[in-house]
Length: 262
Image (cartoon, rainbow, N blue to C red; front, side):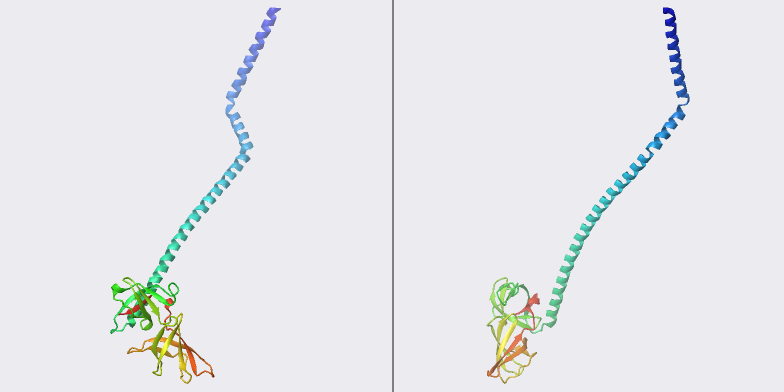
């Protein structure tokens, strides 16, 4: 009995081992086909996922590229703005120098040979200094003296040097309030021109003296330099006098240079 059971167990083991070996041989023999089938099945199953992943990757890559491009464009834009600001600053400086050059040419072009003058730059105008005064960059070391006349635009008397220092000078304009200047009218009559401030003047005239708007009032002397131009006449029939309002031919606020007559 025991012998028969052992025999059955051995036979069962034999067939088990034989079946395993046969299964392994079949797998080895058909392995290429199985692998291809499994690979095809896996590829078919995961293909949509891989495609979606590639698309998502492309989108994120494009998005990153867009951000990089925007950053580069902003940097380039900032650089261009900086360069443009520099060009505009240089252009403004060039235009200022060109304007000064033209003004100097105008001054020198009107200079009379018998006049001894020195060109001075205006350091401070009436809007920056005491009312109706100028501060010039020339002084005693340049030969400037108190009382020297100051001209603008070549031949327009503006004022007189009131204070002199080694390196600069202060000029009181003829239009300074209360400043009095002897002038000649077109009829050859000498009158007193009184400053009203801001480049304006007035003259008190006899009622019967005709002085039309636009007439020039000139400095007394050999050279008739125009000091002011008549703008308006104010009169009252009850008054025996009339008032002429005048203005300077040169706007001091627009000047950068003046001439000091030595």
